[in-house]
Image (cartoon, rainbow, N blue to C red; front, top):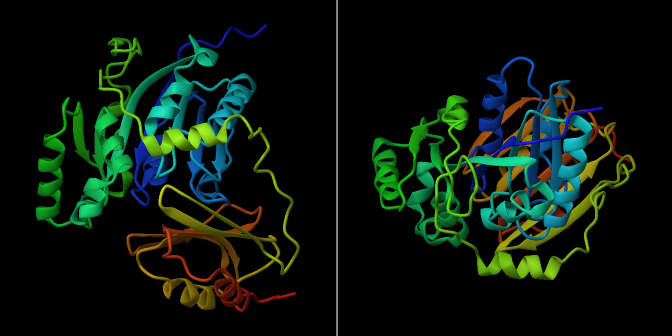
Length: 354
């Protein structure tokens, strides 16, 4: 008989859209001690789910994606059911949760510290990612969720520092210094390179937080009225498997749209045998406004590729994902392109259109 699950460390990796959360988690996984099995739960604001495709299948790593909403409010019930199943089926040694870039940590912490996981999960450090360049936009400094992610974090990883100026990095340090209580640590993490020791440092000491949580700095409880309204509207109407959908037909992509918290999404899924001409596809995607968050995984004439554009910075890498091609476009409400026009342009990039 298996031993009861107890005190499994859980870490939250938060950060606004395009801050590099998945990349940082990749670097943490590369430092995973041999013999440990980790579980990673990824929540995406978009409907089709791209970030899960960034992780290769491994025996010592379980990656579960929950697209189509916000773990802290709309998907709280789904998170609880999914996590219960994952814990008992895979029995991980450590859990990392990546909320949506628009996710507020308060509702998520309620689930993780709730009765269902009492004595099973041990919520440890919460890390917030911050791209110093984002602070150039006054709207970011004033965005409630953006500020609360930072305020509730134990430590802050400064990402994209290799792309930021010294003045931007200094400004970020000054801005963070105004938060109270102060952060336990603030570190540069260019390319997502954060030492695993920053997460596990002090484990075994288990300081008590103001609500009795272990391994976390005592912080003023925060919540968001907008997220609270979404939680109340969602209720328990969602069930596990709500995001399972059949494979699209060849040449007939499935389009999904969504919106909340002042942002909208456009997403598509294609059959895995639909093959894109990479040059034509790149020309279509590069014409999208630079303010949009664009990410996708595609079967192309030169192999499977992962496309990732945030704050105008583009990366194109090989992908081990083979299940289907996917694209997600996220932007502030009213900023997205016409869905039919974009789908027509994307269809013209297929080498084998139906």
